[in-house]
Image 1 (cartoon, rainbow over the protein chains, first blue to last red):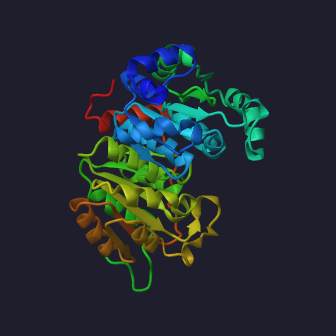
Image 2 (cartoon, chains in turn green, blue):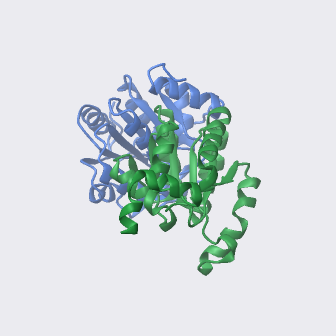
Length: 180
Length: 197
């Protein structure tokens, strides 16, 4: 009974005010902000978002995160506003693309990165990246912000503003529990 | 002109022959000497020269092709580049963009770093492309065959993959003389038909 009620959009929005936003509402927010090309490699934290993107037929699945970054760069030059979804392990994979393509060619994209290893609570392979990720982004000068359900509109607005004004990748970091 | 019997065409000659066939196609060139040779032979606003991010030229080209489905996109690539990101063959093969032509100039070496051998001496890249799902796949050794196949692939629906065996010779050409950020804007404008905001 409760879960059926939660499927109603009004209640979902109410729910979002408290602690989480639905993946569907979040995708709509991105689309309303102008993002119209989505690619990436899946992570469980972003599962609902990717499912929504697939349902809306706007998702191009990539086989590696650096490939997704390349796809986004091409789409940007073709007139799209791209977003790349990935687990933070993929940041390591795409580092060279981000610094030798995006940052020097001024090719922007939104990086929607799941923060595995946040607070040191995750499988061992995620712990180091979870700990160093924000420092890594600072080091290569990619602006980032941790997405919070309470400020999701401002967060997306901020990312869009960095995207348009600086024309470089901008990251929104996603911890578990942000999406209902 | 046909190369001498047994002599493989230089990449520069093969690239030059391909470039002569182009009209308004959008071209993405891989890093290293291929970009420099294309820039020296026939620079045009529809050319994007990738100078870093080795392996990503077909991914960038695919992004352009998906964003501009009515424009033909030609990726000029090398064997070392393809080997570095072979997964992208699968992405192209699965998405099957009809406006995507992938031409690989295969000299079997990493030419920009001192001609160290690549695996394409033994690995048949065009068979990998075929298995991945490219629609038209050809492998050629002669210049006139490269010209014929390129003409066909520019006309036909893709995705198409042409492997052109070339010699190790690299032309003595300088670096690409366009700033990367300026290149993005130039190419973006060309891809969007002059309407880039």
